[in-house]
Picture (cartoon, helix red, strand yellow):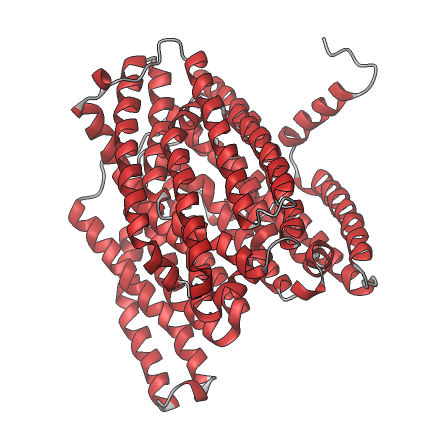
Length: 595
């Protein structure tokens, strides 16, 4: 890496680090406020209504397929054109995208209006709840359309690497939403109060981001005259890839709630939602840490040994073989579950075992061909992007082990102090989903880097594996084990796909297994050792009331952070990582000149 590359990496790394810290802080504030609100909300609405509020966003998540593609493109091309100082292309791209999103919003709202009775029927909403359910779905749809249409301005700011600002705006708007909820619920508005607060918050946030874009970019403009066929082509060739990936990701994220609602009704969905609330909070804090990878990768770019994509025919064959291999491998645990639950089927055990043998014999040639193909694929040349990725992944793995390890250790007292013993069944969900997030979220830097350099095929590969196995394992787990089985299905499918993506990314970056273990996995031993210690303490300490449980959680949280920080500082962090922290600490000491 030459001197210019080193300076460029340092500049982008500092910006990304600042954005990551601001994003994590903002996201933590936002979701902690949501966690604090949940007991208040449950005191005014029923668990069924709480499940309905969750289901509204399951339905709407599929609208995000269109939004996630176009907004991701805004971020990528804004970062790229900003580096090129090409404001004209930026105006053309955004105007073209905005027209598309307005048309998409109109079509989507109409479709939901026509289909929402059928959609609610899929979630087994009872006849007496259809009226309020319809109002909630159409109301959230309207707000969502405003969000993903005007959200393009927020994406432009993210592309300019102004993520710290957009997160600050989001926090301010969300605090305003919390205040509105606390006012609306005691007034008797019920679940509709949540909708009204969500709508007001969204409009306020979009207006602020819109104004700031025009202040940040003098000369930025939108209009019919900027719409062009060239911008349309450039935008939607990229968007098409991202939308496929987004559709699969969103479906994977919502599948468990859909299956639970089908098997157990809205009350089961509500209990699952309680269990995933804290892991969901941790997930978004973690995502805020690696969000800057995307604009940074788009800005830095990447060079490949050969530089050309694999032929289309070879890629299609590869995806097909991955699909078949995932299907066959995914069937093996399902067959084993049926073997150990003889009352669930009438087939002889010997026949089921024969099926497993046949699957292994069939899948072996697929795996051999895939292994050979992957070894021969193009590799990224040694650039600043590789160092940026590996250092970022290391710190993210430490963060995930710290946050989700603590949630796993204190799941029982945390659920008890938060919503009470009547919802203690959600503690198991919290443990399983936390473990899933701890592993799966480490794939974020890889997927965002590949998107930033327009090589998103590797993300598609791992999503194929995750999707097929989730379709097999989540319904099977829910049938035999309820919400815990659904959670285990989420864990197993996400981990299998994640391990595959790590191997593929290491191959592309030329990272050896030894280097990956030493750099990324070894530092997580510190937080995980503390996690086991905290869990043992929870088994010893008494826990009879919500107040006592809350005191335990606070005490254990302080203990967990202090011991984790000590272990990391003494045994795992490098001088490059501890020096900036020491400078910050010295800078903040009383009496120091901050000049």
